Image 1 (spheres, rainbow, N blue to C red):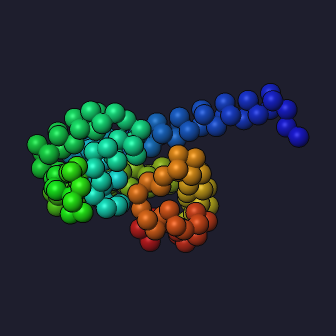
Image 2: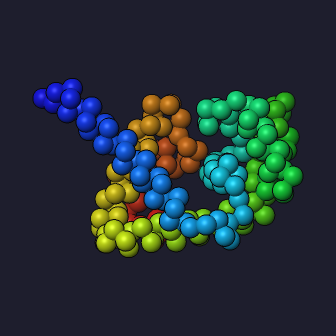
Length: 174
C-alpha cells in the first residue's frame, strides 16, 4: 500500500506534467499566425459542433461559468458571424446557439494548425502510432472519468456512450 508521501509526490508529478503538456501543446502551434479564433471561440465552437444546439444556460453549465460570461463570449462570436441564435424548435423560451458555416470553417482552419502542432510534438517525442494510440486511450479514459465526476459528457453522444478503450482504433483522423 502506498503511503501518503508517495501519493502526494505522484500527484505533484502529475500536476507538473499536465502543466508542461498544456504548455508544450499551446507552444507547438507557434505564434497565432494564421489562426483567427481566440481561445474562448475555439473552445465554444468545438463544443457547439459536437451536440444539439444548447441554450446559454446549458453552455454555462458545461463550462462551469456564469451565464453572463458565456453571453459575453457568444455575443462577440455573433458579431463576428461565427454563431447564430435561434428560437427553440421545442417551444422553449430560451434561444439556442449553433455555429454558422463561417464559424465551422474557421474552426477547422485553426484546428488544422493545432493538429500540425500535435504532430510536431509526436515527432519530437519519437513516438510511433502504437504509442500515440496508447496515450490517446489513457487521455480518453482520464477525460471520461472527469466527465462522469461532473455528471456530463462533453457533448458528443457517441463519446458518452462508448468505452474510452474502444473509442479510437488509431490516430485521430485515421
